[in-house]
Image (cartoon, rainbow, N blue to C red; front, side, top):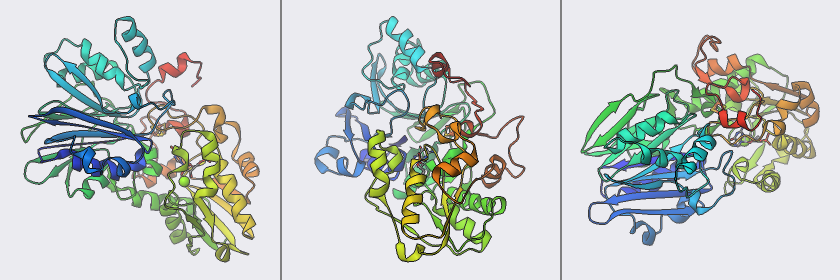
Length: 465
Ligand code: 5GP
Ligand code: SF4
Ligand code: MG
């Protein structure tokens, strides 16, 4: 998911709509905005579909006045598949000290247990979302201000969270102690501040990056002042390495590094680890493109756009049902036959999850007359599900959980298949000595099975680590 909030500018909701539009790659199912105006109070709108189809309509935006607004773009992760409008964030709660809206990116790993406990104690849940627990935990806190109540609530949850919240006068941002999901602070004009999942959304509204919110940090922005607190026990940060590989936009900056440059560097590492004699390096668009450029540069094999993507389709993976996903590949990708015919092609993609994309692409490339197909993957085999906010399927649907690399090669039906090593990926992401196995610098659980936060709800459902 993506979160975006603005304080201290006229018509904040307009900026939030633009910011969410720039974060649309983080969630395409639905979007919501809550705004506050001193005269008109809290107003909200929650809609299915793209931000541009909903939140650009003057009639809708006029209903969201005020200098303070937050928003959310949604992508449903484990546990909340059935999309209903009640699941769309931000969520809102009335408290004795006034209303408060929250938007959450990430996934809480003890939400099922918390939900049961809260319902038993009288909470009335409105949605199926794990994030709603935060509002109910806030309601049970005895603190006298919103920020302290948020801190109380977040000390009880486990998992990954970048949360932004707004009261009548404050914009609040928090990252979980491991900092699994991103969150940055920006400055907008004279008096405005912005919180955003990624820096690319600051660019679109002309805001300036101030810094990242640190893992375990809470910032409270009020009347042009920023207060920073540390509500949690300190921990070794474990940022999601898959944000570098796939999830974030390539024009974003994470930890002072360009995401594009990390991806290009992954391609360079891949070319060193897994060279092959071939005529062309082609990306699987768009997520494989920077790595393919790096592979081509390092190997000296010419880069070519052998596959064209229909720009008007969404990201296939993010469509919630398997059926649509299966149709998706052909609707979305097409091979440039003239380019491919008779060629030995290196295909670079970011990841293999179920393997259905890879298999269909291989078919299309062979139909187009390629002489050989060599798959190179910009991440290690995805053998474990993510429980921290990326929608990987159950373990038994992950190709790499069931097969060795050689078995996958045979099943996909390509001449060769190689994945970047975990160390190679770490190096590309800036950890020069590779993965520190005693104290890993990133979360890489979907590749290693090393879960930095125990997925307790899943273990309750029989998941074995
Ligand atoms: P599959 O192997 O399941 O057919 O799909 C892999 C493709 O899904 C890759 O090209 C990747 O770009 C795309 N993808 C989209 N969203 C995600 C995601 O959340 N996780 C992973 N691992 N891949 C995703
Ligand atoms: Fe990111 Fe994978 Fe960790 Fe999930 S399990 S947070 S996708 S690195
Ligand atoms: Mg892809």
